[in-house]
Image (tube, rainbow, N blue to C red; front, side, top):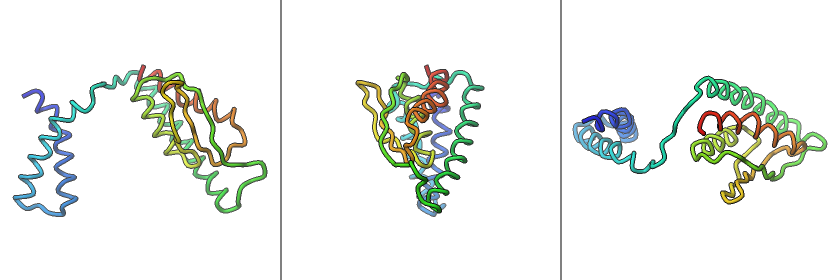
Length: 162
């Protein structure tokens, strides 16, 4: 019974998504959607063998603020590049950044942060060397960008997840 209660929020979300995607509130869709949602919600923990442990919620809030500010700033910068063209000395390219973080949830969060920020895309990760390959729209300061990724994002993520 406890397992069912833990699965209920996900099941409700899946049912709502099912009904929205099918654009129907018919009895058949309600029953079928409920069955599918409950089965998937009960099976979901099997797909996530590693549980996330979120510690230091204030660090997470501070990180979210940094990310929001960086996304806004990056939107402005990319908009300028689109409207005015590349500034002198700016060039796109790939950058390899050595990482210390090993937690899969932290790496996933870092991938989201980097990809959500306009002008940067997570291009790959070598798990053996633990090196992030990043595609950057303006690679005029690779050391500065490496420092930002490691200090502003990776360090707080390590505090939160490891």
